[in-house]
Amino acid sequence: MNTNMITRRRIFLKGGFAAGAVGAAIGAGLLSPRIVLASWPKSAFDAKSLNDALKDVLGSDQTTASSDITIKAPDIAENGAVVPITVSSTLPGVTQIAIFAEGNPTPLTGSYDLGPGTKPFIATRIKMGKTANVLAVVKADGKLYSAKKEVKVTIGGCGG
Amino acid sequence: MANSSIKVRAKAEGNEVTVKALFSHEMESGTRKDKKTGKLIPGHYITEVTAETNGKTVLTANWGGAISKNPYLQFKYDGGKAGDTLKLSWVDNKGDSDSIEARVG
Image (cartoon, rainbow over all chains, first blue to last red; front, side, top):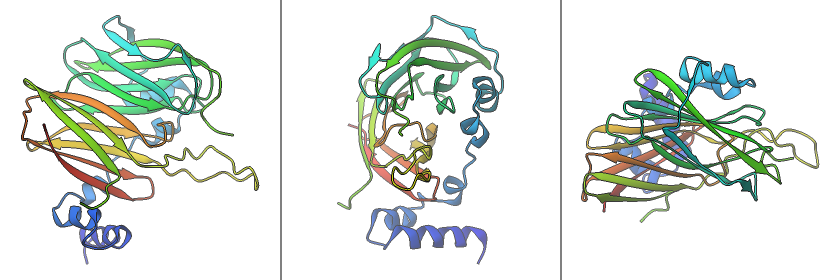
């Protein structure tokens, strides 16, 4: 068997039977080694320092503050385990958005690569360990722009 | 229809499609300790979400353990219309995965 077949077989055995969603997805060619073995920025997610996380996920820690980035987040998060965040920007040429919780042990929460017609708009929910700034960094035409908003956290969301 | 871990609504308004998705996943961060044993609970979280439509990848989300349990994701893209097919798929750090095809409404 080649690697492609071995990986497909492993997915198939893990995923259950052909009648299930995973089996159907394999049959339709939706699950491929490309997806399973995709490059994930591990060092960025493991980075404890914000600057290291910025460098690893965006290529640089040099950002320019921009009022063309909007962060919508609660002033006070009732539950630090579920903090709703929306990041949007009116900057042209945005290819990537990264969202950090500066008070978390590892600040990077997620990074979003946008296709050519995709709007600079991401809404999700993150865990925050304590009161801290949420930092949104946007890569537009190769340059980094940022905005931040403080979110007060009463019950920390990193657990324990 | 088979049970999927992904619920998605994709709506076209003119040229712009808004996608709202909810994923069923424990998103265990890997930093929590089991209160009885004191040992770290191993991380188990979605690492990548991919959205594809009309032969293009519109979004790749790289996630870590700090995304909330049962993650929510909303994004928007141009160049879509009602009737298009949108494929959403995820992979997690244990190699589990799931995928769904939805019709843009």
